[in-house]
Image 1 (tube, rainbow, N blue to C red):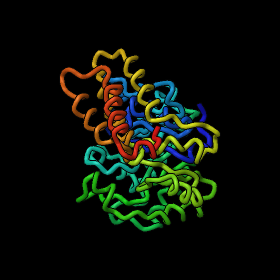
Image 2: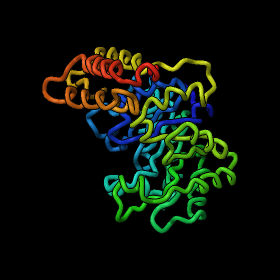
Image 3: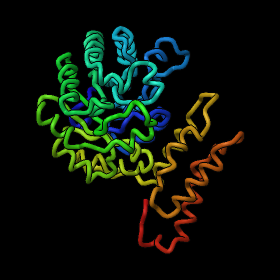
Length: 338
């Protein structure tokens, strides 16, 4: 499925250990047009690993694979694998600051090696027709001036990359944990806006700290796209308004109750002997965020979804608890919640 400029208006960030195929299927029920990304998958895992790291549900389209690596031939080989499996885009990770990534000489540390990233882009584009994009930071460590950032973009763009997703924080590769790197370095949205002003020919999406569609609209005055990260995970129902609010489609959002029934049916279709309902339910903990019964929903899933004897009707039973709580809520009649 070709990715259009419309799809790029909103995307959900690749999040390690979070945005697996079950998460993406769930998020797709909320929005038809939002661009979804896989967790980062390394070239080593794809080439030498025994698991099927490229598995996804056909309903996830448009969906992009985020790839971690720095060897151009390996990156090209994995991009070709992704295209053959039906992915709509391959994205190069140049933003992750974890020790695992640093030790592998890829991720955010590649901000200091734009020529390596450019070489990867060239080799990947030789073997695939789908877009090859880059997700990066605005800088790393002491290489945090606009000139450093602009040089990285210029070198990679000259190699043929025309789409960049920019986390508007620099990364401290020494002294901060990955979690701290998502919170401590200050956001610098104007730097990403400046990049777009300097390169109107490029597609630029912004990422970092974006929590509402109102904020997304403000960013879209300056850049081409917005990538939402952990807010889409902790408060997923945010995406239910995206197709009408951002993409302009005359559609009715599914209710939370309808989503529960859809995902219960999804659970019942799973045939993997290792599958457990919790593999889906863990991505839905925030579905009733801020709603009557939200705490009960999270507690029920957490308590009944884990353990050696998981409840096969986990979602429906949790929903019954929520319905009872809502009916007993003094705000129930006024809220008219879905």
